[in-house]
Length: 108
Length: 122
Image 1 (cartoon, each protein chain N blue to C red):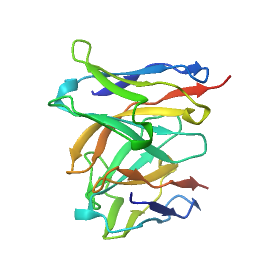
Image 2: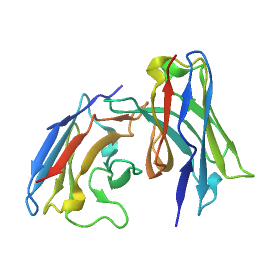
Image 3: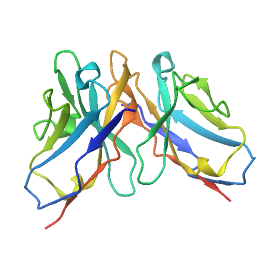
């Protein structure tokens, strides 16, 4: 199975700063079948990005996804307090679909 | 608005079974497949299994084969995940999630439930 490694484990940034989250795959993710989710405690996870770079419906344009092959990045261009959450990547190009272990974003 | 509403927390003894429900609200359950994903304490997310929308085909994580079953009840728009012969390492929050798109291998999800904590303890 494809192992996804996310880094860093935790990001602590101030409002207005840029957050850069990495997701590295143990082998190439076919067709860039990679998504990002946002997960806040006690809430349902929320789809942010699919196909590595396509924003889901209703997602602000300060969230962007880039990358291909084995290296993918989620960028939050101007952090807001509501962005405090754990962010997960997931690949759906191989069976079983697998998730990264998450990056926690803390807003100072 | 669309939701997936999950049943409440469960506490089970080792060897017992648990059946978690996931009710679709605001859309027709059979229009989309459903997966179950779990998260053990301090661990990442792990896909458990799925049921397809069109023909009810199921697929499960290999290590859970024989212990897990995913079903749907179209009359009540509810999906179920049953896990048998529970062990302590099955302790986790179990999420249901609606399929947005599936490749030939796996799917991603555009709607999730809030999760159901299943605790396995003697």
